[in-house]
Image (cartoon, rainbow, N blue to C red; front, top):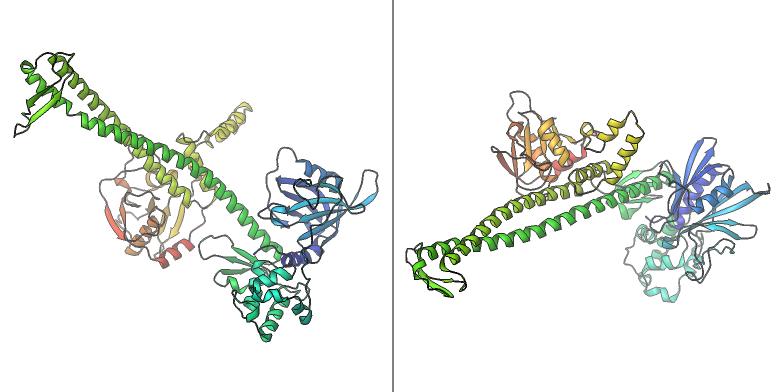
Length: 615
């Protein structure tokens, strides 16, 4: 749900009593458009987050710590100068506007006690954080500075007069139904109810307008002219419950999660919303905690997707590079194969030297390789002798044969690279956390697809400092062999099933973790994770249920996810071999069994929901 004026009002009502009188210890600016204020309270220290970004503007208490830049930005230094050591004496919202004001008392340079206002304007791409002296309404500074060249309405520059964002002229909450109905005009009759509510009443977002209509027993596509007197009365009661913070002081904050496994919250609300009834509802202890959980998960997801995107770009570029090479090799092989016929022409010329007069441009001979002795026309260079023409064709043949041999070797190498990159792509798309992506990044560095300069720089710093942890830091540049945490599941028969998260883990599971008699599974000839089922001594196979569930996991963590009748190979670890110079995650085997399976959704849901935490 959007952080609209109504939700902000509930948040202010919740936090104002907690924060009043708090001392400001320290101010940080870890992000370009985000400020963290360390508060000292009787019940303990808290951190207040103020975000004026275009995508997630907000404020709430947080326990999250972010890395700060080496030197604080200018706006952070201005805030430190005026606010550090001060006391938060007020937190309020004007009507239901999305402008939150923090009133802070502190001593100025002359030793006088003054009150300053820090305005957080939550308005999408126009969001801002502005420090103002309320005595003169003078702007001390703004997180985003802009002049009349960008805004005709106002300037946000030090020394300019602060103007509140322009009013939208909407009606504040009312308890009077007649006054509420008077807000409607004849022009509204042909408008959807959600649009009418958005146009006339303060503090309402599209989601909240939709919820008001739903809780009034109407549908989102209902127009105002379709409503009778009873419908309007029900609509007013729903508005009074949801759109008037003064009329509904009691709230029940909620988080909503999509069906799935380890999913991030999709929405938050201050009371349960009917429009989210298909999602999984979880009650939150407070609205602040609901906001913190929601935005923290969104931030983590954004960081995860940003890193996934950068690594995906590297893999895609390499895939394009090697596929272009494959096209070049295919053309070279095709050309060389067509040139192999020059050997026959050379032999036919050698057998017919006595028939070739000097200066001939061509000769027609019988092809004794053909049982029908068909005639073959062989072009000749008239400037060369008959024997030199034959030798020229032998040289062209030998060149084609050498080209064919080399091109096929390069083609095999390129095919191996493409297959390996396909496996990396699968691991990338299925990685569920930042550490998993970091492992894939290390693998890309090890394979030479990324430079890893920042890692090398860190290692060189440790080396120069002669730290006793030098060996440990050096080993951190490589795959963390002692910190491998594959996915771990339990079958319905309480058997352990291991699943590799990336190629390095696949190698570790198959070649180090697995015992010779353990069962190994992998989707046939398709990139995917290695799956390992430990077996007892003397046990050849697990029970049928465990085998089916392990195969289902192999399919789920492969490029065949969502397909039906997928071929899954299974064999014992002792059958696995890793060829010399093979890429990570690449193994071969001679003896195996194959199971064709369409994973059952209920089995996958139970397995994935029961994943064990190995970190």
